[in-house]
Structures are given as C-alpha cells and as structure tokens.
Length: 376
Image (cartoon, rainbow, N blue to C red; front, side, top):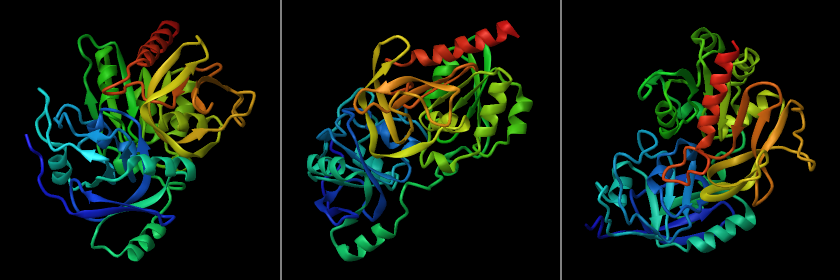
C-alpha cells in the first residue's frame, strides 16, 4: 500500500546554524523544539504518542521508518505529542497484519510536521558532540535567517513545566482485570497508556489523577499505593507531587515512580536534578540492578538525571540509595528509600513494544502493597 507519492523540499536548522536538507514527510509547515535522537529500531508510533516527547523534534537513528504502518492499538496517548519528526527514509509502503494506515498519512492527519531524506547519522553525531539543541523543521521556501531567529528565540527545555499541558483534565479509572486486589492512584504528568494497563492486569484498579490534584484530595482517597508517572519538561519546575509523595510515604503507603516521576520522588526527599548533554532516548540502554547484579536492557526517554557523588551517594538526600545505574555513562537509573516503601526508576519498565526486562518492577510495587496491607 502506497502511503504518499509527492514531497516538497524542506530543511532542518539547528540553533548553531547547521542545516540539513531534506523533503517533507507528514504535514508541511514550521515546527520548533529541542532536537533529540532515538535509537529504537521499532516502536515509532509509541514514540510519537509518548507525552514525554512534548516540545521535541525527534530524530530516529534507524534508517527506515514506517515499514509496518500504524494502528489504533499502539498509541500511548490520544495522538502524537512530538513537535516534529525526523527520519532518514520514510517508507512508502507498509506491510503488517496489524497495519491500519501509513505513517506519512498518520502524521499528516495529525498535523505533525516531519522531514525525510536527511543524513540522520550526521545529525546524531553532531548532537552527541555538541549536545541537544533547539531547532526547526521548515519548508524549503522559508528564509533560513528568519527561521534561525525564531529558533534562537524559542525557550530552552531547562526551566519549562510541560507536564500540566499533557496531563488529563479529569480523573478516570482503569478497572482491575479479574478480582480487584488494590486501588492505586496514578499522578498523571504525561502517563503512557501501558502503565495503568499493566497494573490493572495485576489486579489493581487504577484511578488516574490530573497533575493539579491537591494532596488533601489524594489523602482522602486512602489508596493502597501511589504511582507517579513519566512526563516532559524540567523536573525542577514540577513541585505539585512532592508533598503527596512525602505524606503518603510517611503513612507507609507504597510509592512507585518512573522517568519524571523518578526525578520528582528524588527531589521530594532533597535530591537535585540536572540536564543531560543529549539525554537517553531509545530501546537499548543497559542498566545494572545493584541489588542483584543483573543487567536489564531498557527503554528510555529523558533529558534530566538525578545528581550523585562519585561514591554513589545522593547529595541532599541521605535517606535515598541508588539501586540502578546506567552502564553507558554511570548515571542514576533507580533509587529506593532506606526506610519507607518508596522506589523509582529513570527508565520505562512498561516499554512497548519492548524490551520487557524490567516489568518485574510492577510486581515489586504489588508486593510492597501486599506487605503494607499485611502489616497494617
């Protein structure tokens, strides 16, 4: 099935002035954002619909994207959240028994500006050397000087609170599959659909809450556990969950966080976060579990990390210990409280389409709730 037949000249322009020529892929227009690269070989629809990519122009390093099309089941939210999409070659054909349409048409229908035909290897090497930076996808007719001025005026990711913009505006429930064992509250800062789904499959009724939900309202729910979701932006700008994390954990209620939720838990107990040079984005990051020594291959999508000292301790947060480390650069990938039932990871254990090495963390959360119930 052919997804598109014509395209127009376009280019990707970085804030340092480097330009990459290509052609339109998806919607045509001007798109601004932080340029990052993702090393996954598949899962492009999950990446496009991951709210954590809000405000970013995502470059896929795998050279052929779109070959198995798109479908309604692989979406992690109600539609694409990326600011723009960059590929080496966008497949003109798709073939899959699950395919319901082509990627080009999907991007166009959702107004996602994309570009194809560029040297994504050169772009990735440039970002690795110089760091993630602001950029624009622009039609070939747009004057580069004017586009560069708009890029340089675009806000940087540091200092941005983007979570509220992608959070649900009303609470909703994902019912337990089979017998209901626990009631979990999920703080939505950009939650991916697979997280509540996996918890529901373990017998949890999951109530997803807007980011603006007050601590008082959460305490009245008397939940069995609190899940703090992934999301976009600078964790230093998101303070809404910290009071709830502290008060619920003080009461002995288990708290589990991923990605942005991991950073928010760390900051709630006094840790600091910082911007990574070009972030971790992809489905092939090796992480060592320090508690057992196993190495997990993980899916990741974040631009910030938790500070740690050379000895592995976390400055400002003596009650936290590091449980997982990234084997690429040694950054903190997981933490746990020394006394309270609180733990979190920087990566995505719910990863779809994979890898699934880390799904045990949801069972670990369930076990923490079981212990809490037994001891109460």
